[in-house]
Image (cartoon, rainbow, N blue to C red; front, top):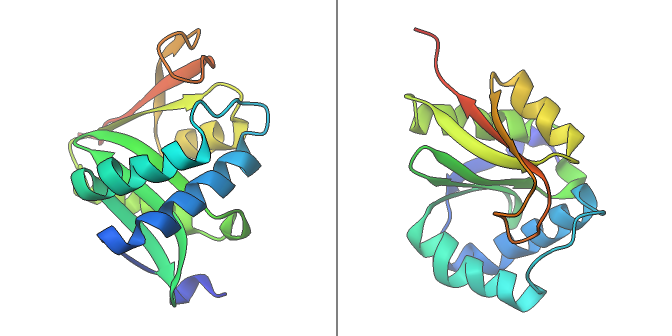
Length: 153
C-alpha cells in the first residue's frame, strides 16, 4: 500500500458501507476512552442516508479499498478519519489541502480534548482554538474544542 497510489474523489452511494467501516475502525483506534454515542448499525445508517448523499463527502481510495474519508458541510469540517493502517502516511495532510481548496475562505471543526494527535494535526495546519466546552452539546458528552482556520491575508 503506497500512498502515491491513493486517489481522492467524491464518495458515491456505493461507498457508504466502506466509509462507515473506516469511521468505526478509526474511532475505536483513535478514541478508545470516548464512548461512541451510536451503535454500529446507526453509524452505518447515518453514512448511508445522510453523510454520503447529502454532505460533501470525499474518500481516499486505493484499488477498491477506502483508506480515509472527509466530510464538509460548508465551512465546517465535520469528519476526517483514516483507516488505522494509513496513519502517518500523509493522507491527512492531503485531505487538509483539499479541504482548504474547497473552502478557501476558512474552516472550522470540533475535536475531543482527549484527542491529542488530532489537536496537534489541526494546529500544525494552522487551526487555532476558538472555544472549549464541557461536552454537554455533543452526543458523546465528551469535552471538546472548537478550532478555526482562516487564510492569511
